[in-house]
Image (cartoon, rainbow over the protein chains, first blue to last red):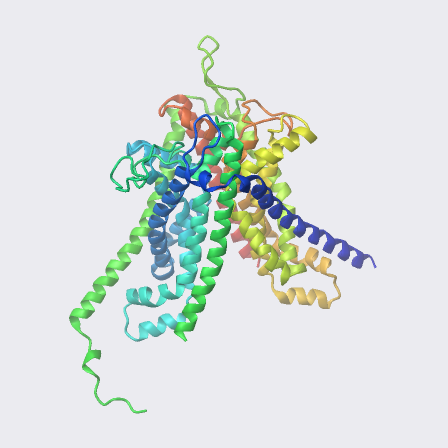
Length: 296
Length: 314
C-alpha cells in the first residue's frame, strides 16, 4: 500500500516539524535563562550602570522601561479604545472608513525603525525637545495603536447583539449603551489586548533608540517632583530603556562584563514578557467568568 | 402579572435629562472621531515626512537615482581629490532581499507544517501545546533574538562552518526564527476556515490523511499560506536590531552567505545617530528609510490583492 506508507511518512514529518518548533522555544528560553539568570540579583536590578569597570547594574534602564511603558499605555489605551468604538459602532461602509482601515493596516505593518525615524524627526528635532521619554512614549503609541484599535473593535463586536438591542429598546441612548453595556462586556478582550500591547512595548527597541535616546540622564531617585530636571519622573529627560540597553552594550559595550549585563537584561526581558503573556491569559479568563456570572 | 395602571412619574421622559444624554452622546462621538483622526494624521504625516526627507537626496543634493540604487561603493568620507563622497546602496538592498527571501524559504515549510500539525494531525492536544509556544515566540523582543544570535549562533558559525561568524547566514537564521510564529499563526487561521465537509468527503472516498492534506487542504489554503509568508517577509525586511547585531555590517558587496554584509535597516541603525540632520549623508539614510516604507506598502498591497483574488475564487 503505497498511499498508506506515504501517509505514515508525512505524519512523521509533521510531528518532527512540530517538535522542532517546541525545541526552538525551549532551547531559546532555556539558553537565555542559563546565561542570564546567574547575573540577576537585587544589586543588578537596582544599581546604576558602571562606565568602565565591571559590576554595573541596570537600575535606571529598568525604571525608564517601566515609565515609558506607563506613559505609552496612558496614551494608547484611551485612543485605541476610542478608535475601536468608532469602527465597531459608528463607522459606515464608505470610502472614508475603508481608507481608515487601510491606514491602520499600513501603520500596523510599518517597520518599527521607520516609526522611530518619524519620531526622531517630529518629537526630537521639530519640537526641539531632544531625546525625551515623552517622545519615546509617543513613538511607541503610534507603533501600538493599530493592535489596540483592532483588539478593542473585535472585543466590542463580539458582544451579543441582543444585549445592545435590549439596551436600545429600553430607551437608553446609543452612547450610554456603549459605555454601560458594550464596554463592560468587552472588557476581557480589551484588557487582553492592552496587556499584549504592553508586552510588545516593553521589549521594543528600534522605535525608542532615536526617540527616548541611548543614554540615561543622571537621575536622583529621592526627587519625585515630575517638574524637577533630576527627577526620575521628569518626562522631558532622555531615558534609555532595558531593550535599548541590551542592544547598546552588545554592540558597543565598553565595560568588561558587557555580555553578562546583556544576558541578565535579556533574561529579565523574557521573564517579563512571559509574565505579561500569562497575565493576559488568566486575567481575561477571570474577568470573563466574573462578567458572565454577574450578568446571569 | 398585571401591568400597573399608570406609569410611575420617574419613567416619564425628562426633557432636560434627554438633552443632557444627547450632549453626552455627541461628546462621546467626538472623542471617538478624535482618536481616529490622530491615527489618520499619524499615518499621513509619516508618509509625507519620509517622502520629503527621502526625496531631498535627489532633488536638493542632486544625487542620481540610478547611481544611488545601483552603486556598490559606499564611502561618505572619500576625499575630494578622489571624487568626493559616494553613496551606492545596492549592496544593502541586495542584503535585505537576500536575507528576507532565504529566511522566508526556511520559515515557510516549518511554519506551514506546524500549522498543519496543529489543525489536522493533532487538533486537540497539538494546538493546546503549540498555540502558547507560537504566542511566546511572537512575544520575545527582537533584541533578545539578536543577543542570542550574537552569543550562540555567530560563534557556532565561526567554529563549525567558517568565516567570521558575522554573516548573511547568521542574519538569515535569526530572521527565519523570528518570522516563524507569524507564518504559523496566520496559516493556522487559514486552515481553520477549510470546511469540515470537504475533509469528511475526502476521507469518505477512502483518501488517506496525507492525500487529503496534499490534494484538498493545501490547495484550498494556498492563498492564505502566501499571505502568511508575505507577512513574514514584511517583518523580516523591516527588522533592524536583531539583524544588525549578527550580520557584520560590512559595507562591501557580499559574495557568499558566510560573508558579512549589511541590510537597509542595519545601515540606518548604525549611522542615523552619528550624522547631522540636513547633510547629504543624513538625507541618504532617509532615502533608505523611504525604500523601507515603499517596500512595506508593497507587501500590504500584495496581501490585499491575494485576499481579493481568494474571495473571487471561492
